[in-house]
Image (cartoon, rainbow, N blue to C red; front, side, top):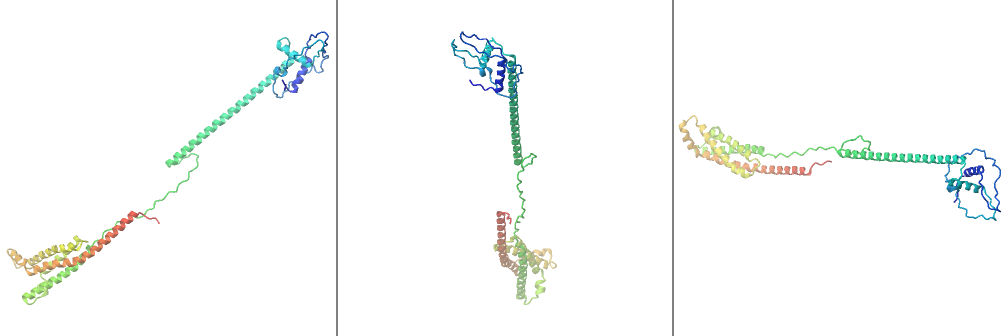
Amino acid sequence: MSNTTPESGNDEFDRTAHNATPVEQTVPDGDTAVQPTGEPENADREIVVPKEHHTPVVADEAYAEEPDTHVLSSAEPTVLTQADLRENEIREAEAGTGAIPSEQTVAQRAMAERIEADRVEAERIEAQRLEAERAEAQRADEEAQRAAAIRAEAEANRTDGSRTDAPTAAAPVAPVRQPIYVQAPSKPKPKSNRGFGIAVSLLATLVFAVLYAGILALILVANNGGVDLVGDVLARAPYWIPVIFFFLAMALLVAVVNRGGWWAYVLGGFVVAAIVYASYLGGVLINVANTITPNQIADTLRQALLSPAAIISFLVAREVPIWFGAWIASRGRKVRERNAEAQAEYERVLEQGPVVA
């Protein structure tokens, strides 16, 4: 077994070997034992234990050697070396029959204490290192958990649209689209045909008045041989009252029919004629109101019902609305078409929606 003890340890054991008491050994007859003589020069010197760190070696293992199986014979001389003497001392100490010098015991104890102190210091340093590593790992875990909590809170705040004071990177703010207000198209107002119809009614009234006056004048000429147009026709109530009521009846018909077709004026002409006929009878009563008594009113009306003037007023009032009603209805048809086009354009614009340039 090889020994790896430092040189200083060998010197120390060499010095102790010089100071050790020689052990007497029985030698067979004929053999001569050579023993060292004299004291070593440094026998009284103090043993100095080296302070340098080295790998401890157990004395038993360091100095244990294979047993000597050589059998001494009487013919071989026995020579005891310093190593043999040291081995004998160790064996006697293990067997309890010898004693190890006190200087060597102190040195070994000091060396053992120093080795133990080094081991304790190494264990303390290792424990401190492990504790520091655990603390660092725990601190890293706490930092990771804190960062994860901050990220989760920031994500929740972004989802809710609220702001947070956490030290996270600010998310880019999306541009807010400003609403664009456009004016909705107004619904087209249907155009009326009443104004045009009333204007045409004035013209129709003028035509009715001329025709009615001319026919009455011809009747008077045929009956009397002559006529005063103003005194016998125009100034009398049976003439101007039917003319007034014709305009009113025609305007009422236009207001009711408005944009209606010609058929409405054909049928409405009968209503206008009836109103004009009734107005003629009223004009007759007004014309003779100062010359008759209340008992004569019925006779006067019976005479006027079938008079030529009454029949002419009815027929002329019946025909004029038909003629001018065709004109009014023609214009009403065009108004209807324009209204339909305007309504279609309005619906198209609404369906298309606002257009931003």
